Image (tube, rainbow, N blue to C red; front, side, top):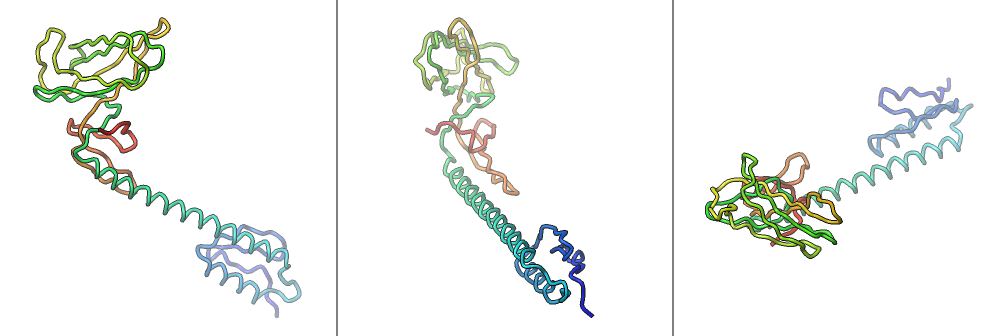
Length: 225
């Protein structure tokens, strides 16, 4: 007695379709699984209702599509792993180097200075740098006047407005830029030295540990000196 085309393949987690024309997309975990199920369907099909060539070709086309998508996914995974490995190597090479990034605070060492840069837009008529201590009090105000457009470097000598040396610690540095009669916050980059690198787990990118106690990712670096 012939067996119907309606083979129950749900137990294997797949459905290849039936002679009735209701066809679900074949989702195979591997090529061997798909081919095994295809051969099983051909072997036990009803000879009086054979699998139509159009349906057979449709299943093969869906299999090729699924295999192609899996190939693209594997390629993207390999590319991501390669990029992560390169990022780890590049990050490790930065240990001991000075990097510039948009940091929330600058770390002032005892008797030291703070190096940074301001991104000055075209048409800036005034550039003012305000340095605040941990209590939010302005301890130093540097007025650079009009500056040439571009990334302009600055060095804070660690002194307050009275010329006294300030204690070591973290200080926030903000820039105010005047242009066309308006004042707005400017982009400030602060320099710090990379002390070590923490490798991220689970495919996460590495983290750069700075001498001032902060942490940044490799993508946050805007300049290296």
